[in-house]
Amino acid sequence: MALRNGVSRLDSKISRPLGRAVRRKTEPRRRRLSLALQGGGAHGAFTWGVLDRLLEERGLDLDGLSGASAGALNAAALAAGWLEGGAEGARANLERLWRRVSGLGEFSPSAAATPALDMMTRMFSPYQLNPLDVNPLRRILEEVIDFEALQAAEGPRLFVSATELKQGRAELFENPDMTVDVLLASACLPHLYRAVAIDGGHYWDGGFMANPTIFPLVFHCDSRDVMIIQIDSLTTDEVPRSVRQINNRRSQIMFNAPLMRELEALTYMGHIAGPGRLRGSGMAGKVRGLNLHLLEGGAAMRAFDVTSKQRADWGFFQELKAIGREAAAAWLERHRDALGVRSSLDLTGA
Image 1 (cartoon, rainbow, N blue to C red):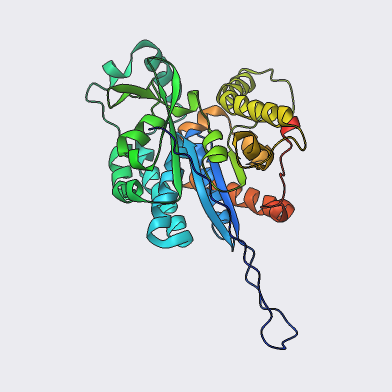
Image 2 (image 1 turned 90 degrees about the horizontal axis):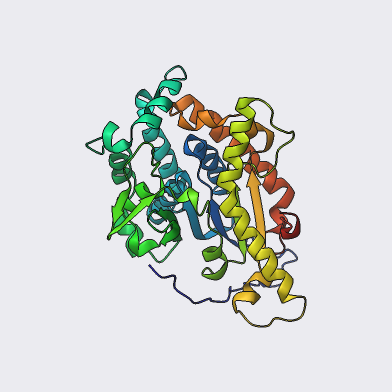
């Protein structure tokens, strides 16, 4: 499962005039982009909407994809669809995934049942509540994702994170490792499902330790541009005072902590490098050449509390998708020209 090294230079294409024509025939400038997809249960449908809009963008090539939990499911569905039919295939496969997940709505607890479920999961473990270890996601993922194709694919590169529970560390799985168990491990909520066993290790949700990971996209992909698609906001507009506000903010801080650690590490690397000190394509040089971007849902997503991450109804997914598409359209309107040129996220203020 070790990450592979190797960086290739991006090819540049220069259009040439045809004959004596005054107008120059040019192709859209192609932009290579890697995506880091945060997890967040049902709120991952927001990321679906963002991806749906990004995949409409002409001249955009996806290099690497990292994800945890729902972000990992989005990444794998996108990659599998891309291999089958390019951008349109990816869009269709993402919709297929979320439509199928919405079919689980009847198994999702209602708002009235949620307190009872919470009490049950505090008193009994999934080894007692779910002795047969039934996970309805397994069949959906097996039907939506061609794992053999992902394993053999040369691109887009996948980096799926899961938390190895015995040592409490993040583990990354790449394309050759990709199986349904890897995705189930990345999305394994320990109060609902047993730890997923893979090659002698046992794994819980990847969001605990890498949500999402950025490093492999920076150091093991060719693209200079990395976009983080964030579900849980880094910031808040007010000091939380009610129980609901406190629970929401606590969840945001906990699940953003791994991301913040990686952003702080990149900030430090950029600081010690200093202008003019680095040459070549080494690790520090990659940081110097990094264009980092962040796309999140703002106030629209902050309006939803943490309990809504358990919902699985199609209407809710459609609402989140629409918010994601709108957020992506707004980001492109402001920052499209930054892709391939500069960062739109200041690491020193991240």
